[in-house]
Picture: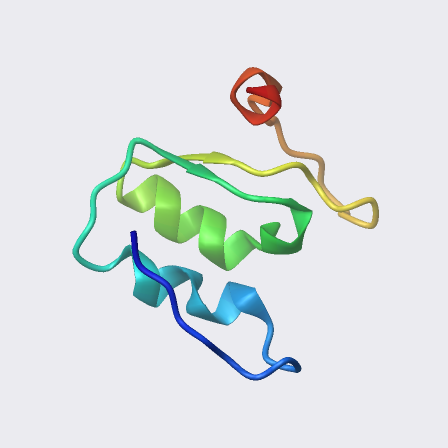
Length: 71
């Protein structure tokens, strides 16, 4: 497990890619605050399954594995 302490106004998603360096998870489970195309592209390029519910304002819908999310 790795964590960073950031200022309150710094969005957590900015630290998601650096935190993945050096680890190789099968699944990336996060809340909808992490619903960003750049992060999805990074995860799929590395063979990591993103399990992130879509934001309500997402223009293009995306499939989510809610079975993993509910667990």
